[in-house]
Amino acid sequence: SSNKGPRSLHRSRKCPAARLPSRAMSMGFATPQAHDGSALPSRFVVHARIGETRPRVRRPSGPGGCLLPRGRARGPRSGRSGLRDIALGELVAAEEPVLAYHIPEADSGEPSSSSWESQVQEQFRALPEDLQRAVMSLHDAEASNIGLPSTLEGVVLTNCFVRDESSPDGVVCVAMSRFNHSCDPNCEGSWNEACGERRIYASRDVTAGEELCIFYSEVRAPREERREELLLRYGFGCQCAACASTGSDTGSSDRRRTRMLELDGEIGRVGAADPEQGLRCARELLDLYDEEGLHTQSFRKRACFFMFQLSLLRRDLEEARHWAQRAWKYSELSFGDDHSDTQLLSKFARDPSAHPAWAP
Image 1 (cartoon, rainbow, N blue to C red):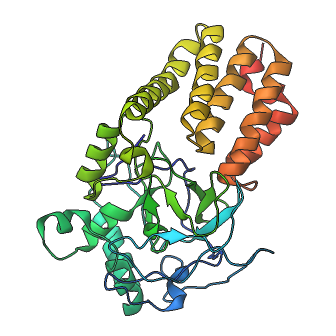
Image 2: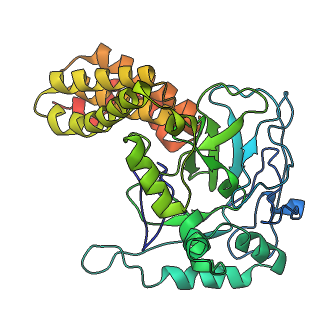
C-alpha cells in the first residue's frame, strides 16, 4: 500500500525504520541529469551523508561489468535501462540519501508534521550549490500540474521514499528518483538500515536494454484505480504494459489484482482464529501472483511469512520450516542477504521454534 507523510506523496516501499545513513556506495549508477538533458557532475551518483559538504563515492562493478548507462534525460524522470542482462535478485543500485527527515509523534499519538519542512530546508542549505541544483532538478508534480516553478517542498513530496511502511519518516535519493514506475515492475526498492542506503534489486531476470522500473503506489489494484492515483499524486498517466492492455485481458487482470489485495488483508484477519483458512488464502495469493506474472518478491516473502506463522499455530514444525525457508529466500531476492529481515528469517528457517508463536 502507499504510505504518505505530511501532505506527502511518498513512494510506496517496505523497508525497516532507520537512522541517518553512515556511508555511500554506488553500483555503476548512471549520472543523474537536469530537465534539459544536460549531465550533472558524476559525483552526484551517490550523495553526501547528511550534514557533509561533499559526497563520497565508490563504484564497484561485478564480473559482468556496470549495470547502468550514462544516458540523456527524457523528461522529468529520465528512466534507467540495463547495459547487460541482470539476474533475479541482483543488486541493481544503492544510494545514500541526500535529504532525510523524521516526523515525531504528537501528544495525540499521530505524526506531527510541524518540523519536517525545517529539517529538509536546513539540510538543503548545508549542501553545496551543485548538489542543491541536483535536488532541484527533480520533478515537482504539484508545481508542474499548475505551471509554477519547482519548490523544495514539492520536490521532496514528489520524490521521497518512506523508510518503513509503518512510519512517516522519509528520504530523498536523487539518482533513485530517476527510476520510472511500472504496474508490472521488474525491480523493487528497500531501505537497508545497516548500510544506511536505499537499494534496488531485480525482481526478475532483465535483458540488456530493458528499462528498469520500480513501483510508486499499490499495484494490486484495478487499472483505473492505479492510473487515477498516479495521475493525482505524480501527475502522469501510466502507460506501462499492464495499463496499456485492452479487452478481456484487462478485466481478468483487474479481477486477479483486486483479489490479491483482498487476500493480503484477509490472511491476517482470519488466520489467528482459523489457521487452515488463513493458509488457504495465502496459497491462493501465491498462485495469483504467478498467474498474473507479478514478480515482486517482497509480496511473496510476506505471504510465506504469514504461512510460516500459521503453520506454527497449527503446531506443524516441519511445515513452518518449509515456509520460513521460502520467506527467507524471497527476502534475499528482494532485500539482500545483509538486511535485518533476511537475517531474522534465516534464523527461523534454521529453527522455526525460535518464533514466539511456537511457545506453549
